[in-house]
Image 1 (cartoon, rainbow, N blue to C red):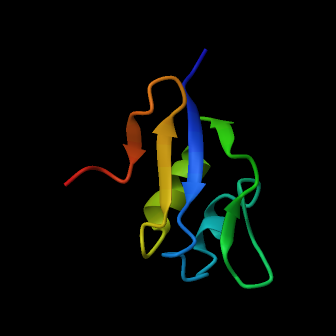
Image 2 (image 1 turned 45 degrees about the horizontal axis):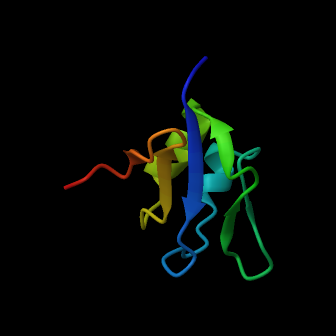
Image 3 (image 1 turned 180 degrees about the vertical axis):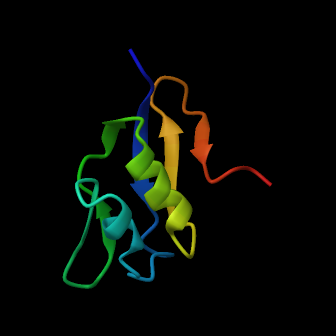
Length: 77
């Protein structure tokens, strides 16, 4: 069985660009205030959600491993 991720969006950072929805339409949605929300906060590791996190212009999306809490994205400096 593959890794499972916890998906979190920091809405104090989110600028509502919609890039996450473009990359992972089944993973994210924008609310009426154009703030991103993960559709499923716990998901199997997948390229679309990773692309959404990597494509966010303000790095508002954090992916962590469910079992260990280890940060998958963004990379630590």
